[in-house]
Image (cartoon, rainbow, N blue to C red):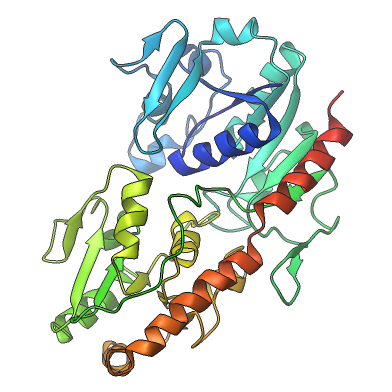
Length: 370
């Protein structure tokens, strides 16, 4: 099977690469501005002005070739995951005998479905990233155009049982679909026991975390009031200037995993557009206790990973002083950090079963493919 999917997120793309590898399929992404000029790629075409951008700004970000692309066959090396990506120009895609076309962005659904019809491919949706709220995103999802859906998030009409497995409901989606966790390399993000440092190492790996005016101030206040710990913020700072906690950006996912395992406690302060939530799943996969905003994840796919005092601590309503007291307790009881790390890794293995999800996805495709 040959699969074409639009591209907008490194880790989402890697998860699709891993899924296609499981299924024995080949994955391609569009390249070249023809995709935008002919109306197949439309993400932010009509609302870019709201963000002060030109209509083709995001399209150029993802569709323009790079100088190190190999033109024939078109391919690009993804340094962050260590693999080559297959690229198709619009003309190449028309003659590639594609079997499946997937749209991962709501604004692209209509254009990509039109392309799928033109090349006689089965069209479907992948949903999960850029999920701000039901009123902003979900009303734009064009299930009427799709034959199937791969859903890496909790949509309206879904619920979780006591171990977090997702139960499907037809209240919202009446097309064949599977709710699943986006796969990432468990060779990279393998669990390892916590060996608490002195001073304790506490770090965030959320990109552009300092831009989060809702949650970053608490991190700053806690770090300022508890300078006896080793605080760190990994990743880009976005529009904000670097501060004393900046640890820099890490180029590869394997490097992120290694750095996470060097931390004693994960601080996870993301509270916007989390979509699937790769970083929060990464923390639990490597087996580190998490301090963060459980309340935000309560109705998301990562919600069942949070177990207060067992795998994590919710600081939604806590002050910096209360956070400091919590950290002092953990510093006095390093064995508790070790136990919580082990519990976090065990919880991840209990909740996330890529093999079972693969079988569910195979069963879905057996229903929708010709």
